[in-house]
Image 1 (cartoon, one colour):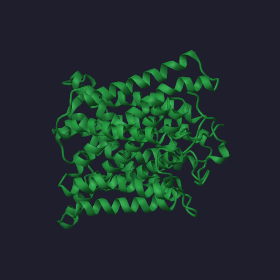
Image 2 (cartoon, rainbow, N blue to C red; image 1 turned 180 degrees about the vertical axis):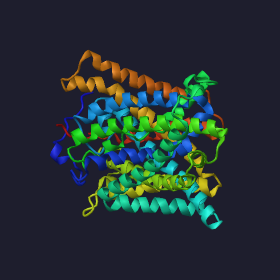
Image 3 (tube, one colour; image 1 turned 60 degrees about the vertical axis):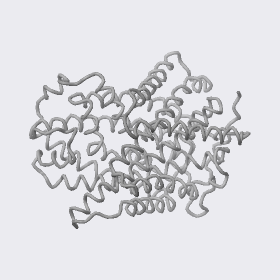
Length: 464
């Protein structure tokens, strides 16, 4: 089916403020969506519980898979920039129903990631409040506070939110780097033989650990949602996506090695530790930094909430422009030049499942794990379909080479294996229900698409 011709790039800003974000502010969007501070504090211990001494290897393999996907996304981003992110790329090439699949998957991914980090926020907030005051506070109230603050900032000004996310993540990651460097200086100027020889690691443990390691990276591509607002987007955005995947991979891998080493030194089990960064700070000789890292994780989770709402709102706005959502959600604020209605709707959508689960007594870490895993399904499907679409896209633009099939094929295969790893063996408890929730959501979205049958579903693209 032939796709409609793209609109002129000068009309594709949708009322957003064009060219307002610097390269660093654009990079901050991707970094904040990943919330990198939470990986050493929460995700690496989960990976270690499965992969053991192969935790560092799980992150090396995850970095390689994500970099393949980043290279594919970067090729698209050199030619096209719009608020629709991966939805734009896929819909220009794939059949309409697959384009809609990417749109609904990506929207779910950003909203569910926002829900996940809201759960993480109220967990760390109550840890700090309990230590400071001796009391814990309403988890629902804490979730409402962080969501309301994020909605207000995203509603008000994208430049303010980008700068805030940049400084929050820079400060949080710096404290973790200080702990890791001190740990390696004191104990790590030698190879850890247990990790080097992967002692005790099993193949199934590595496979399952790799799936969890991939969750650390999801959202790395969210700079692509700023296609109308980034300065010089056809250069800035592909660089941001690739830089984010590489920098995050290096950071996560070094942290994974250092954490396992630190727990070997302390004689404790990283996979079952309730406060791993406190242990590492103590082993490093600076226990006070454990508290600073918890504070850093809290503000990083706030930045992650803000980044997810920012990204989800722009995807929803473009979906509205192309008939996949109600047309009123495509409006932008006359003065702020932000997708104000979409910001409010995606913020509420991120809050609701957390508020319900929190009211039912679910812990913040459970919410973080459940909704983060649900988001992973959306990201993996969107990544795989974009990689599949790339060869034809390059051919249509006259830049295709036979070797250009290799990277997209490897990237799509990696995502397929990650999806299988999420589904088999069937996870126990609530995790086993998540694939059915994702499938039901996707079917509902596709039924909406089929009923509305928009005449022009293809997002406008910005061609350089």
